[in-house]
Amino acid sequence: MKRNISFFLFILRFAVGWHFLYEGVIKLFNPEWSAEAYLRGSYGFLSGFFHWLGSNPGLVDIINFMNIWGMILIGTGLFLGLFIRVSSIAGLLLLLLYYFAYPPFGSAHLTISTEGHYWIINRNLIEAIVLIIVYFLPAREFSLEKFIRFLRGTAKEDPYQSSSGETVGAKRRELLKGLVSLPFFGGMVIGSAAKSKIIEPDILSGATIALKKFDLSDLKGELPKGKIGNLEMSRLVLGCNLIGGWSHSRDLHYVSQLFRQYNNENKIFETFNICEQAGINTTNIVNFYFPVLNQYKKITGSDMLSICQVSIFENESDPFKDIKQAIDHGATTLYIQGANGDRLVRTGRMDMLTESIEFIRNQGISAGVGA
Image 1 (cartoon, one colour):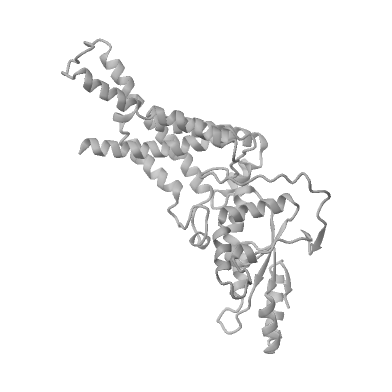
Image 2: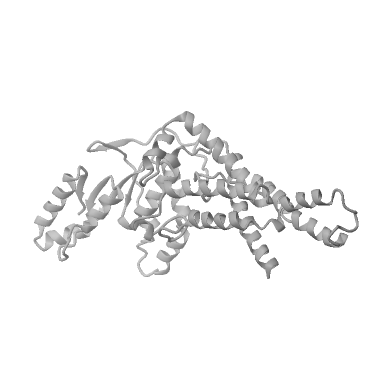
């Protein structure tokens, strides 16, 4: 029973160590990686501190170095079983910094995220709890620390039998336990180095999200821009029908579902990314997809503008709830959805349109009506 528990604890340490080490190595092989956008996009009660760090180029360089090599050293210690408790404490502190840079609180985290659906408890917090367990129960039986102690303990003993009566076979088993992670360590480093030549991580901490890099060198000129209020928007705007799966495919009902399956979150990020590279700086969007857009902006440091399509619910207690939600999401501009606006005109509720436009403008946001 004791050995089973020890092996289980070893697996926990091994898994978290693997994750830290992979994150560090994949960033090390990517010279374009920087923590700047991650720091500048922070929110929560510590956001001012992280924004200050991200606004200082000298500090960003130091943070990049410490982040990469901190992850590599922490991962190596946990993975191989060297300085396990020191590695656990260092890893715990790093994970807590990640956690509080983007605390998973609030309604937005009840919908869509790169890591699935979570609220309060996310991957960073779970791994931090695991490291607390590893600190108190380091499972040294399967570690290089055990191997080093084995060598020191047998240096003055008979090579075929220890003072406790252990046979050389038993000691060989101890030797193998101490070296069990070395083959995996070598394979992981080689594999991640090879993978880094294929993908480039765009996320700046936590899980690595690889966005394809497109060669747009053949594009000539620059997209023209126009102004709405004080905003300069590209005259070509990214729509969201296909991203949302609204294919308008008449009786081909399966097509919308195919669009939704194809446009997973990573593909949507790639779409935003290639549009920005081509000069498109604005997207038309609805409230449902703001969590995805805001996550993309947080991860990449994007300044993508948004034109949010909203509706007025004239028969509900709060007819402007859709408008208020868009403002809370950080919409750049808002307009009343065309069919909704037409219905209000047809039913003689022009007053609702007037009130909604005034409400939006009073928030300092440009407003419009679709028709």
